[in-house]
Length: 125
Image (tube, rainbow, N blue to C red; front, side, top):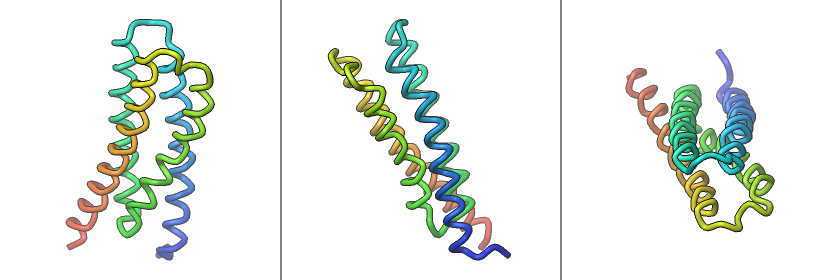
């Protein structure tokens, strides 16, 4: 039996690493894509789905710490957004896209983590 504190720490660290990978390969290409805006919106939708699924997996793994798991998953978005948005925010659509990524991915990670925690709690009862 794994101690809950150790499990929560491992889930938080794993969530941070997974969040960094998803942020780097999701947000960056969407901001620097030279294609149409529809291509960027598809990447945005895929990013929402990935954050929801990762949040649900982390929430189910550590149901008592679902908020911490979601926060650890989303925190890497901020430095990646700062890295990629340097000089890229000159146009209004790009600024709206960045805000959509930050708010939408945060909401999806929180919703996914809460969903995973509730499913795990319901299954255990």
